[in-house]
Structure formats: C-alpha cells, structure tokens
Length: 389
Image 1 (spheres, one colour):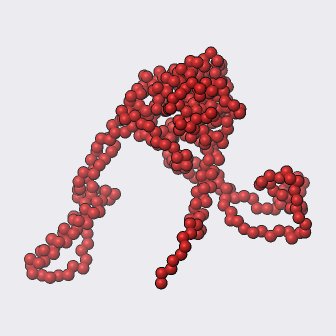
Image 2 (cartoon, helix red, strand yellow):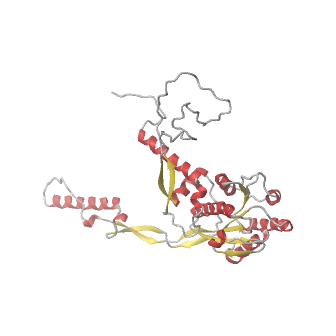
Image 3 (cartoon, helix red, strand yellow):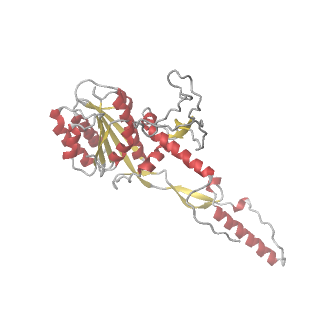
C-alpha cells in the first residue's frame, strides 16, 4: 500500500544534523581565530596540504536539569544582561572568591586539523566574491594540458576506456556466435568473460592551453609607527589577498615593497619583521611599484593587483603626490586597494583624500581596527563597488 506523507523540510537524520553542526563549529572557529591562524603563515612557498590545528568547542545536547526545589522567586536588580549567570544562592559550582572549587562540568574543547586549502574554501565560499576581471591579452602558453586522442591496447588502469572495452568484448562475442553458426552448431553462451585483448585505454597527447598569469604587489609602510601589532594584522590580510588571486590564476608572482621615506623591494621576512625609523612618504612606495611594473610586468601582458597597508600617517607635504601616484597605479592595475590599520574611531586624512579624489572603479579602501574586522575588510577590498564612506 502506498503511503503519502506531508513534506517536512526538517531533516530528522541525527547523523546528518550532527555533521551539519560540526561543520558550523569548524567554520565559526576558523572565522574567530582567522588572524591567529594565518599571522604566522608564509605567503610564498606554503603547501596547500599543510595541516593547521584549530580548537573547537564540543557539542552538547540540550537537556532538562532538576532544580533544587527551594521556595521563593528569584529577582534581579534590572542591570542583568543576556547571557549573565544568576547565582543559585548556595554558591555551589561557582568556583569564585572563597567559596571553594566548583563542582560543575567544564566545557569540552578539542582540536581538529584542516588544510590551508580547506580554510580558503570556507572563507571564499561564504564571501561569495565575484570573479576577477582578466585581461585577454595576458595569457601564457602551458603544455601541461592533455586531451584524449583515440584508444590503445596498453595503458594504466585510470585511463581504462570502459565503454570502448565493452564494445570490443561484444564484437568478439558476435564473431564467436557467427563462427558457431557457420559450423552448424547452436550453443547457448552462458558466460562470456573479458579477455586481455578486449581492454582499451585512452590515448592522451599534449596540447597547448592558454592560461592567465598575475602578479600581486604588496606595499607596506615599515616606519616606526607600524608596530608589531599592526604588522600582525597586515600579514594575515596580505596572505588572504594572495590566496584569493592564486585561486583564480595558474601562475601568480608576489613582489614585496617596503617604504618609509624611501622604498625598496625586499624579501618576505624583511617585509614583515624589519622596522625602520624616521618618517613616512607614501608616494615612495607607489613610485617603486610603478617602477617594478614598468620594468618586469607590462600591463598588457600581466594581470596586476596592488595592495597597500598603512596606518595612515604620512608627511603632509607628500599627500598630493601620493594621491597622484595612486591614480597612476589605478591606470595599470586590475585592482588597487588601500587598507588602513587604525585602532581609532575615525580614518586618517590620507584615506579621506583617497575617497574624495581617487575616482576609479578598480580602487577600493577598507579600515581594519582589530582582528575581528579582517573578515569584512577583505570583502570591501576585493569588491571595488563596495566602498567605505
């Protein structure tokens, strides 16, 4: 007998629900610890399969618990906030002051291992970022691509052409039947197994494939005002930007440019750990970037992404020149982004000038006040249409 049941969108499969909640816990832990996870990762040369351990709070099922069965009604002072714990009156389990050790169960915390590639997938799937605009002329020819070109009798198992193999077997079976009929025999064929001669494998040949290439130009103020905490945020920010571009291109190069009053191309280690004394000329970093682009990365042949991180401090006499050089970078880059690491409530004069004077669709800005804002800042910088006011 057919039984019709009303559609219920709630999945009552306990295992499926546990897997869903476990995935949510992992994603939440990644977002919460994002800066801490990535701040020590090397941008260049890291392995996508490298495992990172992330602490995750354990899952507990909701359940009813018995009270103490005491009379009276609890009342507060009106200053309580959501999530506050209300004392039970006898101090049991509180573990505070001179009331002795608590007797309540603690919260289970365990660690899970995820790879760099899995972290990036979690991040970029939720951000739902658009595809990057690629220049059609910026292509490289790769001979890694292969395509199928017929069949052959010898090969490795992964290249076995199953459909073709079955056809060869059927052809052999039909030939066997015709041979029996010519001899005047009528024999029922119960089993007709495969033979080595039936096996066919795909033949592959190298082919030319056009692939896009890109360069990420990382520019950072390394003057004394950019302390260790600011560089801590900058490292995670640059790491995510590089990973995002790398997911869209076959070949990605990175250039590190450090500047104070003068700029120079440096190694990744010096970029994040070396600090200089003196003032700041932001335009020097932009001039060096334009120089490197003109010398090594012609805009008609490369997809160029430049990102500048600073705390907003700049010598006032250099502001106009910095704005002009920022416009020149917008002319040659697919995307130019300015990220300001500033713990205060307002952004600097430098950022205000950029917002007022740099009117390019491929220019984006963001402000990072603390590590919790890295998530939203990443989206602001990668979607040029989303600008902070």
